[in-house]
Image (cartoon, rainbow, N blue to C red):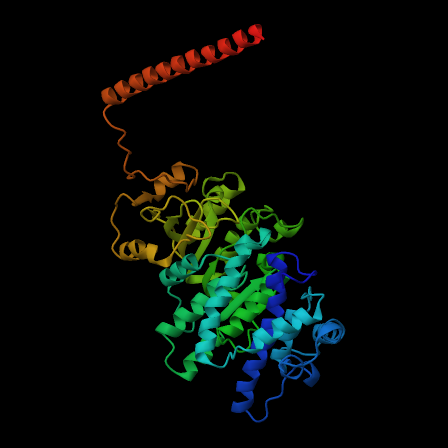
Length: 473
């Protein structure tokens, strides 16, 4: 793809790969459905199915392939007739393609990409598991793709949050800003591993996953991610802006048991969106926090990533935090160090965990340290799930330590709901004996003075020699 003149940068490359992968995975899943159900019919017209135009290694290529993709495939899939009741898989296809775009301009290079994808059999467990790791790396590359980095949360963070929230079989699980689906895929894996024992359990899980994504590229990647994780009809994965719906329009049936999410940092919503919320602001994270509190059932659990600015912010942020602490038990804040979301952003972030239906009485804080020998996270040294072992061990037997402390609600109220609590137990750096430090300082000054005088003398000698030589000439 990098050789193709139409593909400019990682974001377009990943978007281009997204719709191709979707059709390949969709087609492989249909092969399995056809074996299980003689009456199964694909929602995609026969000439547009992957197996009929892409699968043959010596199939159409060059300008013929470009013409087919641009003028047949995309045009017809964008307008695919389908309704959720009778043709839900057709609805999924149409949603994916309504804002998708073919960036490639070289049909020969496109054929080479297609042939590479065709070599993968997504009905083979080993192939699927291996490609799952590859797909995770593809999504991780979004962190380096400019603003597209907002759609990817490091796997270690999503897995830790899901492990601590522990979604159960039958609980409705929602990510209202789902990006490429990292939280939802972690939740699917968690429930399957711990609670799914029968085909009926699997059917229950399939109906329990809900997500909304505003932007077309991450939505496409998320739907593909769901298919890769064997969610057969991800109909509840909507391409929409969750914040565009007024809170008063939600019914009791819309409430959920678990919300896990990473709303965009520092985003500003369009004019008018703020009127959907009791505490009006255009800042995305503040609106999502209000939405999450509203959508959780009593007893429901929420966990999300928030920047430091929300913790210490004042004004409308204060009122939102007050509502959170009155309606939910904000029991834990894990404070992450710099670099977790690098290179997309260097902003320090926090993981907030709370339960709806009871007020907060105290908040436990845990300051996540860098691993030994690491001073910052980066692309080659990202945060790893193994680093959260200490938090997991501490989680059910909480005691104060150099990394953990608790703050009663009275102190938080007195601080006008400032949640930016500094670690009172952090070890103070021992800089040494003051007298010795002062002696070392004076010796350093003396050494610098001696070096300066030596250099000055050498410079004067050199300048003097040059002048004398010039007079002789």
